[in-house]
Image (cartoon, rainbow, N blue to C red):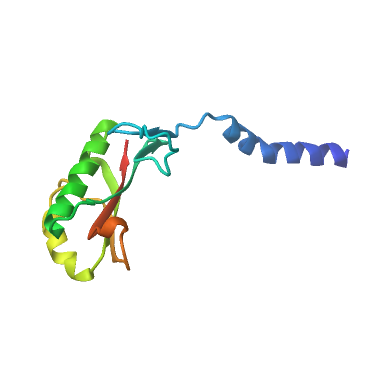
Length: 145
């Protein structure tokens, strides 16, 4: 009898995990500007939607410009990506900003201000040693899809 009870308890404990494993994942990659056609497998997806959220990969402007121009480019690109998956800047819940120099914080902020509506997302801003392609700023966003 103890063995049967133990088996029932074990089955009850595993049931939620089994049910969860049977759920079909809603994870989907999106390529708003088109999937690369150079024959190489991509290293990352520009946007991934999953469980009601949109995750926009870090975005930077690789062909120079001022910090203001680079920040505007990043935010415009993020806005386009969010629109492509049925979301918007107003639905952003978290934003990470990476700066190549902390002294760029104030001018980046001036461009950033107001871009996410009246209720801006939570945000982390950090200065890092380097950003790929010598960008001054890279921004990533998580939003409700």
